[in-house]
Length: 250
Image 1: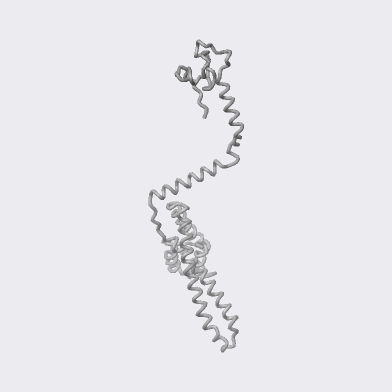
Image 2: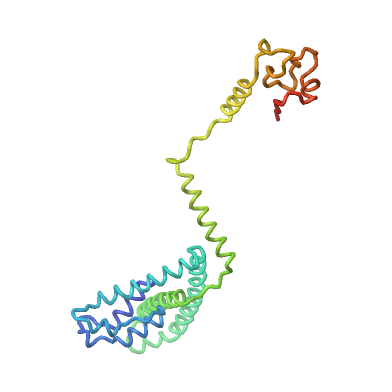
């Protein structure tokens, strides 16, 4: 919409095949300030040798794009998308209501065209199309003007939170890249690896010395105590805590 508005005001103020001396530079400067909030040296541009309307259009577009990008960086893209949607819906709703009212007035008056030997239906269709086209242009100008001049009040903490959310979302998207993510380990394989790890930490019964707890290694709580008492480990040395390697299975 912004680019179309710029094209419209440039074409209005710089007629086709006109010399720079014939350009309406004052009007162009006023329109760029009114619609875009920009103070541009249009008069100085027109005084340049070999300047053309395409160059003026490109300079105004570049300045408007830079201002819009700065505003978006200041408020974050998420805030700007909400503002754009809200303003567009409000303006479109109001312009459409005005358009329907204009059509109703025209419908009441178009019947008089029959006295001038004109087909009222064709006259209504032609003028309705012109009204609709004018409404679209009015919407573009109003939306562009509001977004280029709007100042959004955002709480500093809320703004920081939004930026952190965007950064976190970007990081999650990068991590979810199939090319970078490691394949998940099946649950059965995880259980098997755990069992194998536990088993590797245990010492065989034949290698244990009943009189030397240092040779017992990892002892299961429900195993017979290696000391030879016949009790379970949890009710004997495991209860006393003499062996610091106590396996907890949960």
